[in-house]
Every structure is written in C-alpha cells, then in structure tokens.
Amino acid sequence: MSTDIEAVIPHIVVDDAAAALEFYRKALGAEEVMRVPADDGKRLLHSEMKLGGSRVFVRDAFPEHCGSGGKDGSPKTFGGTAVTLHLRVADCDAAVERAAGAGAVVVMPPEDAFWGDRFAVVADPYGHAWSFAHTLERDSA
Image 1 (cartoon, rainbow, N blue to C red):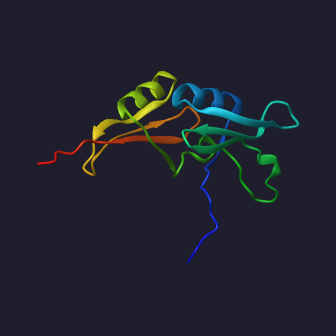
Image 2 (tube, one colour; image 1 turned 90 degrees about the horizontal axis):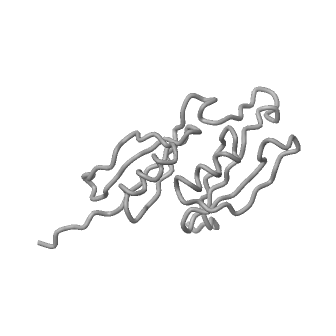
Image 3 (cartoon, one colour; image 1 turned 180 degrees about the horizontal axis):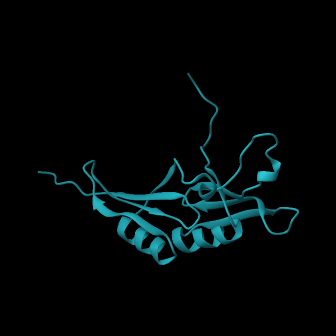
C-alpha cells in the first residue's frame, strides 16, 4: 500500500503562542518561519517553527470557534497531554540543560536507557512534553 504522505507535522495548541515561540527559540533552538495573527491582535491563528529538518505548527486556543460541544484548548485546559514530542539531538544532557535553563521542568533526567539511547523528558511551560535522545556508542567487543 502506498501513501501520499510527505511529512507528519505536529500542530500544538498553547496559551500565548507568541511567548511560546520565544520559549521554543531559547529552549530548543527553534527558528520561527512564519506567524499569522488573529483579528483580536493578541493571539496567533497560526505559526510555524523549524526544529532541525522538521516543522511544528503552533497556535493559540480558540474555544469560541468550536461550535456546539466542541473543545479547543491547550494541555493546561485539558489537564495534561497524551503526546510527547521527541527530538533526536547530538547531546541529550546539553539539550535538557538548555531547555531547563529556558524554563522547562525536567520530568525525567538524562539516563542511559536499555534500548541504547541517552534519554530524558522535559515539560514546557505550556504543558507539552518533549523528550530528547542521542544514541550511545556501543562496544564492538
């Protein structure tokens, strides 16, 4: 079975997307590609950032546009997130240190995982979970 999918792009919702973009720049080294402000002049209807060779869309919540019974909100609105955004990095420890220095909370400090990666998890100030990993060198013996 073939597919026409070119990429999977996470589309995350936050409270204060403009501030989140700045946080992601400091914490993850993200590069802002574009932003589309909402008519209220306070929120972002859409934005895009580049992380390495990947893209992530970021926007503010717009619960007023959900119609009857619909929901739109950030992880804080829903009491958490069921998704972790995973980043392959050159140095897991350095990535966690950078993210924590920018305001992320270390959920799982870097450790050597049984599957052969150095692995860690942080939570950003907007309720999203991010994991970092790099492959450990293996003994050739």
